[in-house]
Length: 377
Ligand code: 1QQ
Image (tube, rainbow, N blue to C red; front, side, top):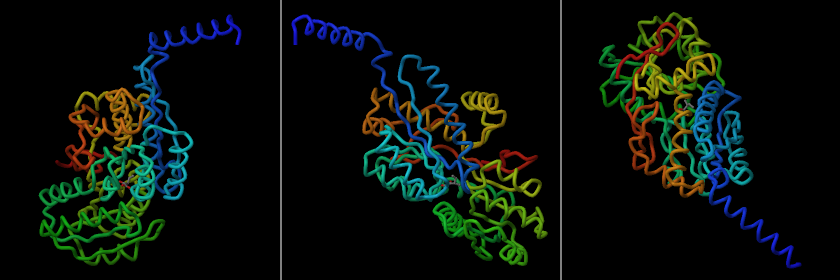
């Protein structure tokens, strides 16, 4: 190389190095986040809300960050099935090389995808998985969604107190990680609370006719129907129970699967009086939640649901971890996430337990006038 050429080259290197040191715009790294939601298939009602909630947080964070750390989002559809979840996880981890993954929507998918991320050392934040055995997959797996193990005992206690439950019928899906896990928790707490289980009925994903099981349940005259189902089947069960003449004085009590406005959209009037355990209700008065409900409604022209709130919070949590770590490196984000305690969020004051599960107060809701209103705490 000629002397002058070498001089030019060194000058360019020096100028770039100076610019890199001086300008945050050049040195701020992007936080690449993979977001895996069910945009199609049986769980699409949850996925749509999750994507909107996450996008709102990303827009707000990027607008506020200016020249600081920006989020680069890569959204993928897991189609509500484990195999597609596995495909998109592999793409995000090895192709896009994301720093952290939010999702997938269903526990049933997460049980198959999360071991891939754990093995690759990619932190995962679940924002809607509530079955048991998710964070146990490994130390890279976190969730901001309260588990059925926390929400359901509270739901049963509040319902027992307010409705004087003595005997119930149990109805659940036996081919899904979430519906099965919800059933296990319901059964345990019903036994602990001394509430008699008159019968246990099951259904499978995709079933459309629930009248054989509901006819048997009707004949047993329970004080309530305890149901662990995803929203598609939950909507059918609620509609058909009322069509078969099971009166509203026999409430249907559900877990997180019921926790979508799709229930009211699909079942209409029949959904009135359904009782649903939850980790969030729109009416929470903490200032961050009030602002979130306002911003979301303005942007999307509809009220947010719990899935939107948890996804919105999820984006803030991973961003908080990356900025606290001053790094977009996978392990650094994992370690910073594990340290989160008392973070002010729309879900309330938020922190992870030792086992990386969500830790905040649950709520019990009732469907009234087409909306989820607080039934008790
Ligand atoms: C799970 C759930 C579903 C009801 C919502 C996504 O909680 O699969 O864990």
